[in-house]
Length: 315
Image (cartoon, rainbow, N blue to C red; front, top):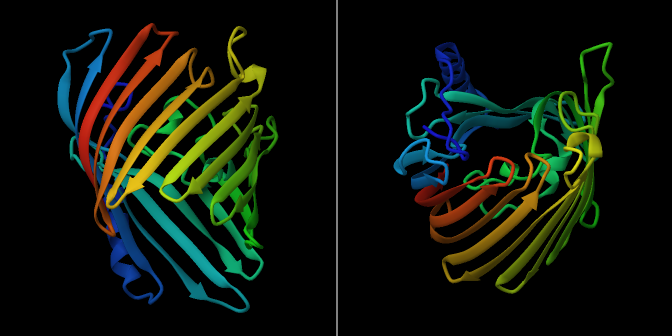
């Protein structure tokens, strides 16, 4: 199987992990509030690179298909919440079927929630539903900040009149490196979503990052903008610290027509990506979609064209 950049993504076997996850799913039936859930996101895709390391190829690709368990149990004054989620290779072409996603335990109540574990950072979560091609032609191909990190302690406030605060401390587990922080402040209204977010000194990642996301919806049209800045230490000397992404979508009956463009030097020099697509809702939990994208990398002087048709089903 190939990834979004046209390179191999084979992983090492994790048969023990399969046994553990299967056991957890079986045990989950004991708990009334536990839910086993998942998502298939599989497509038939054509990939062609400008620099021909291989011939153009058709393949079946899995984009962050997943299987997990989540739930809550009553406790004194609060509820215990938990989740254990793994990415699965829906096309079956990898040596390993599992890759770790969000895994956490915590408590929730009228105050909000407090969690610890391996989770998306508040900066990543702050994009909300901005990315119209999420997992398939993902934001992280061009933009920094799309991180899921370990050793995280997260506190999220309850939503008040649409406003919410989300803060995480990321422990470095090292005396030679300071702990990192990630935070966001958002407003989610009937037509408008706005989020301001920042990362600071995340271990092994960007030194400093600030992000603003805006989504505005009027009737069947939704427009979005994401602007992000990183520290000059996180890019090359001649690179821009600012990156941006813009998108537009239009709903007509069961169809959603969508387009998205993003550009930055934050992941690599001179990366830009444009994508167009159409979603068709077959059922409340099932969407068929077609897409086409063009990715260019000035630093490598190459580009990648992708065209696909796929099915997304959640359960």
